[in-house]
Image 1 (cartoon, one colour):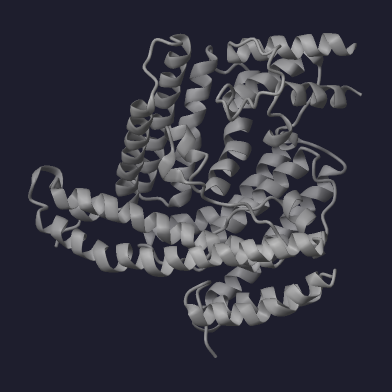
Image 2 (image 1 turned 90 degrees about the vertical axis):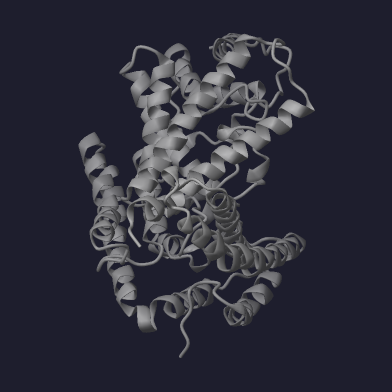
Length: 81
Length: 404
């Protein structure tokens, strides 16, 4: 899958969950700003699984590696390769 | 021979310091001598579980053999197959000793049962997460020479903080650079000294000096409606302060000692009295426990509920999971009405908190947000928390149900 498509999908998932368009704040910390919490995390992982087919175990979910839109896109790219 | 509870008195710290000296010198020379560390761990375990508590020592040995067999047995199985029922049954077996101890304790009035020993619940957390991560395929290998030091790491054995297997092993095997290690020693000693202030001065003032006084005053007014009195309010504040300083002090000792041993055990407290709401509070109070429940209970349960669409609305699913999660934490504390009510209370508090946060999100800019509302939020949160600690303390049980 091309990178632009992945970025677009991740951003639309995040917008759906947080109610905020994050395309111009790619490095905002989603947990510190309370845009996301553990419930939102579960929703995000489920939607990413549904839309991109990536399978992330909760064990592999380390908050510090998933706390900004850019990092999430990196993780998704990493998993797909 | 003298025996101690961990971090009980200055003499314990004196022995601790002597025992840690060779570790400090060897790490400064770029080496970790695991055999020496293990001997020291065993020695301190002996100081706690030998002598008058020898029965607990036997229970600890049996428990360790049992859980080690289970964990390694499950890994061996998992390399070939991955049946869900086998996983559930393994988790059931790992929790079984703890559950039996909790049930026996509830029946026999707070005395440790035959199987029990100080720290059993904290060891169980470590075993359960190791099995869960093995199931997820994140832990692919276990070595006895790493698993046992993780399970029996003496600084944290009695009451945590609860470390994670992969995180611990990384620190355990890594030798910090000299300047980095000096920084860790500095931090470790700093933590231990704040711990002295918390545990031996503040917890002493609140717990040993003040608490019996206010409790007696509150009991003298038990004929009031529900025993409500100004003294009871005093019990609430004094108990909360004692609980915090006692546990935070202990945690600082445990983290400080770990740092000196070259292991960055996670912190347990992060200014909990500045929390803006209950969810924020659980990100700051007994963090290694609440994060354990978040990662190994809440998120997994919610993931399952949402994936199977057990509940129509996602919010219902999240709310039910919050309550189950906190209820389980209540049960973990012990099988008495006040621990279970404490768990439920926090479950509902989080649900209400979440609804409020959603309401705020849906009405952006319409609610006042300034310094006054911030302090009001901190004040409210602290009081909800202190009230929950009054439930947790069991004092209400004494006040209401136990006759003079």
